[in-house]
Image (cartoon, rainbow, N blue to C red; front, top):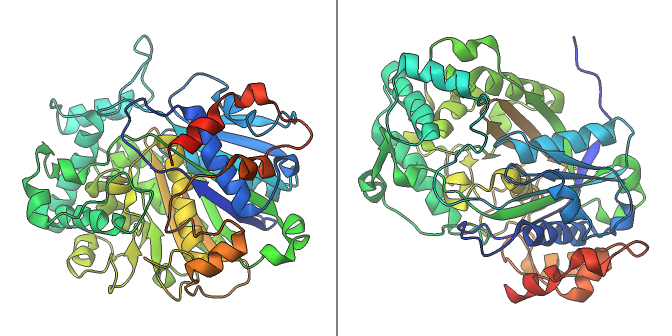
Length: 458
């Protein structure tokens, strides 16, 4: 069935926190509040204009979303709590876009946040079937089980298969990690900003061959948010059109039957990655060869390798050759993960997809001037969750132009904040927060001491 033409939906504002090590020092209420306030300041809207809220998180009790959103105002709008594993943030964006495109709202605030535990991901409901249990059983039947973290085994096995089938080398996966760590030096929100040589990456502790420790994303605490709006909402604010970014194409896909084909690559969602990419690009009217910048779900370097292939960024079975040619970084064919990716930026599950969105919005606006991929007309986002779901999104500028660098001074004038959030991570004052909090239904009790805690961290 051909896809129906969707009404235009735009990203008008974005904001995020620094991604930090999960040490329990910052609660999810602060992370969500900081990200949401920054996104509304960026969009130059007040919470009273928001008609629906979408909260994205994986770890936390039910209605954590209300706890976060009530800090902005208690306007009685619908608030949805979304959990779709590592693709949770992009699933929230997809839900928001669907609502606006369907005429259900003109302005939606999507906030992702996560307060995680140190170490590898763990399951908490051990008295019932694990949703990825059949995936784990297939891995056991085909590749066996080791003492390594489960996700590292699954993605590491996919990397092994790519080596066996196409001739990739362990160093190719290491190079992916080297590039992402190098990119993160220019992202003020990254959890890690240290540069590593390929030798250092290859000599870091082996987790599950070919994956060494520096090729695995860390667990993180963090938040990210986006304000999505309709054409009518944007038309009423023509002075903001230069910063609005069109969601030109988007597809949320789930696994096909090939998941259980006994292939380690298929077991990591290769088919749904491929399906979602083709659908999103088709809707956007964009040729994959014209994409110059991409935020890709590199939970492990092995996943970046197989997803480069699945998205069509390389010829089939040639992703490692693209890596060797330097075609995933500045000076090459395109730039993948200019933010540093999950490997270096961090991976607070509910926030990751929205942070990817923020990075690409800043590129298309020309605000990411310290890491800009110039002359970009379309940007590609990929966010994957095992279990499974993947969201692939294509973004374009609302004015149809290509991007060009904008100075920090000019950005500070445009947004009224006096600084460029794409290159500098700052907090906000109480008066700035009050500018976006509800004027008709705000509660100091709901806010508690969150604002004071946010200010104390900057």
